[in-house]
Image (cartoon, rainbow, N blue to C red):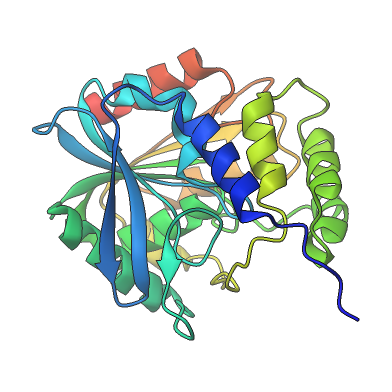
Length: 287
């Protein structure tokens, strides 16, 4: 007899909507067809603003995770926050067809940008979303004006062993309790937004496709990246050695601005210290 999944679609939808209620008024949602399925995108900001595409982290993260930054970024940009295809959220993958390679992710994101009518964008991602964003900027450099990476994983260094060991129970059999225990460990017990935390818990057992993984970008490819890059790292991240990542990125990327935000963990970064993070992002994207 199989183990019953803890995932409840109604509970997930309710938790998702609760976090999305924190977004600015005037938000709308659009669905973009792609070769891999329908991609759900939350949109806000001036229609004539420069397009800014945001990619969430992996696991239980969704486009809703950008709630703490959306209002400030949408003052100057047309904001497009994407639910990754095949991951928790409201994107609907084609049955039996999912992205399997970095090239597939490029095809998928090309289709998303085409569907949004955005030939050139500013692009940002957190964690796994940063990995996708960096690979996309390397694969389609003509489409990315500026790139920001929030504590990106598997870009400049591998995971710390302790992080993987603590994540293992949640990965083997995700339950709300295991998700909460892992996030509380990684964030050092710092109080988390209860609505955001409930959304992470509600995503446990979501029928996700296997995410695309692969090696870190090649050093020679990184050295050839012409886009301006903002790399913001979590000072209390337990994901990897923060100072090692900063040093490697500085030695490889020709146009990178790096800063380490103190007292912030990896999983809390997109919605923690919103004023500090917002100042960094708006200063970089507006320059």
